[in-house]
Image 1 (cartoon, helix red, strand yellow):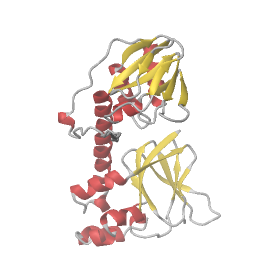
Image 2 (cartoon, one colour):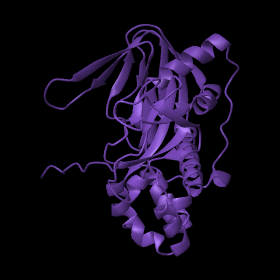
Image 3 (cartoon, helix red, strand yellow):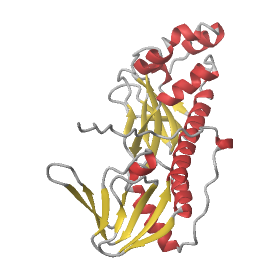
Length: 298
């Protein structure tokens, strides 16, 4: 006789459509008080799974959440079982226990105000750990399909919004729709607070900025000792520093955040070149646009 070898069970992420028209709508859960909604929303935001979602997207998840309770000693999640729920712990305390055949069990305590079970909604397969109630618990839960659809919808919305911003940049008018979507996927978010310097006059240009939200002031100094003069203000959908996509020419003006929060979408010249090639080569598709841009002084 011989012992049979145990094979590791496959763990996979289910493939969901990125087509908004084919995604299942979020099903509303039971009624919640305003206080419940506020607490649940704050808990969901503590999870890296939901950290990038907008307030409106979190609100949809809050509406979809369903209640659950557990008494002290109850097993909320059994190790090795199939799981498709993520939990937001409103009251109580749980411990996450990963039991091993040999060696010391791994234990993590989760207190109220946090989420647990995220892996169960992201991957199909047995739960790698058990979750047991250390105290009576009050929870809300979301199922895999609801969470996945919310995350996919978020990604689709961000991509479409970013591509629309890029389409409004004249120098990028030579890009095809496919190229614009590739570039949209590469944009990075950079946030500023009032008074922060986004760009500094005379610094070498490396990064192009699109204002996603907030207002910035564009100022220029005639000389190092002269006071800055405001040229204009830019807001959502407007852009600055596009010359950086062509060369490291010194910045011709400074850009300073005006509102309490300014969110920008950025791409560096290096990233642009890696994705699409040098911009001057792309601009040659439309010589008139190239000549017009090269004639600009700022």
